[in-house]
Length: 629
Image (tube, rainbow, N blue to C red; front, side, top):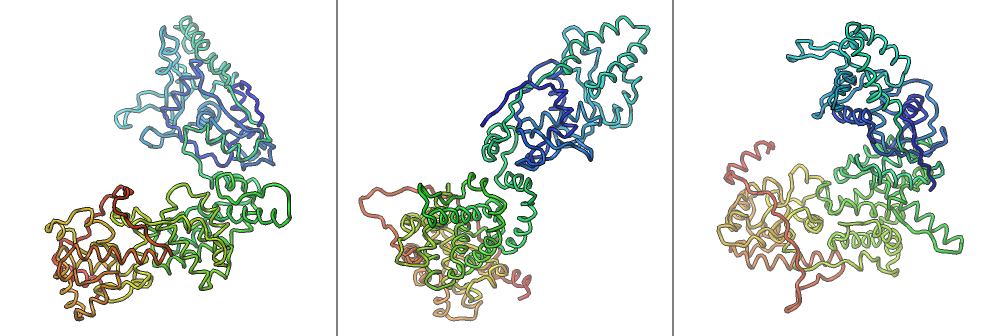
């Protein structure tokens, strides 16, 4: 990657910006400096102080690697094609162009974000004074050049004409690089002050030498990257040097690259996102997820073509890291965008069938990416019973093995390489994600909130295996999940546990919670299980054996509940949940061994109180009345 490091005149830089020869890559975010920062920047130049190094990329005009856009404030229908793009220094150069080269007031903000229109001046008398504070001499003036007081009712200074500027000895910095205008202003400044001509002439000379000449002669050290610099290298360099802004995401960078080839990535993604996020379970799907899926498929295809051709050397890998995404072509995107969209729709249906209905209940959003890619690879085979069962085993292994919480790109690549073959043919090697997955018995004690994938997984599995609401006596599925306001609540209520000395660790663990409707939870309140079970029987018009069967669908035996025996209940349900997890993962849960070192998990914070302040009867009556029942 070659580069030059010239010192470029500020005057020349601003002229090239105005002509369009210097522009921004489209991935640059908008200019946003406020009035104070602009004034401080101008004061630094007025003192001749350095304001940092610029970085630009040489480009081939109409054949730029990135779609260009003019610097904010540049207007004109006949701009030249850019020969350089600003990578670092946008905020400084845009501020300087608008203040010194645009010929218009600067549209900026104050430090609180309030919109302002400003011209920038230098107080000649203040700047020429002995021991002058140049920072104070640089002034910010309203766009109409009238300074007001008393909440805008009184004009205290007027700089709306050249005579008024000269009388007040306020030099407009917008003239700094147009020498005929500077000399015209100077002549008028001296003419107006005939009574004080000698002093004014001396002040002007000091001002010109001390301040104005610093603008005229100012140069900026610049690094100019060669035009053959690779796209991914440009993006990496940009993010390394652009420490003052918010880091760009890969979607923004790829959008700029594709725009150079005439493809509007953002428009395409917005259309697809509108379709996908109609499904509640995909509400939090991100553009990066979509791009990762396409990168996995594109790199997989490249690898397979390499192997099929019998080429020598190491086959390219499957990947979806930043580098892989930035190397994607428009053709790659267009080749896979439709299959990936279809695959994410399938993934949403898969999750719904596993009783995951809302985005907040998805164990790992990241795992949806390989899930969709696996479907795209398998096509209609994913619907075959045996294939689907193996996909389910892989999915739940990832959830209960808690394998998708950190850096996931390498695991994605392995999943895409291994899972489709194994799902299609059980004789193939078991994927690493399935082989690596393990769940420890004591983990149940530290699962307290839906911050954990495994916590969410337990309740999805319970609903998927037919868990019924204790008041409605219906299985909780997509048809009623949202209407019933199903959520996770305590079985032995917090209030009861507190009164009966149950320790917080067991009270808040996943073992003492289950998914029920809002109506049912309100009816339960904070009462003993023996009491609320009777109320459920009366309210539902059922006998005890019938209700016991309903509660049993949650992996619960009501025998201990009817005796308010928390210890027996807790041990029994732990075993039932373990059996359910083992069935989903296809592998035994790791049990504690007496004398062995126990792995310690940090307990999660408890959830918000899920017990109603209303009495059970009044709460149910009020809630059911509001629901029309």
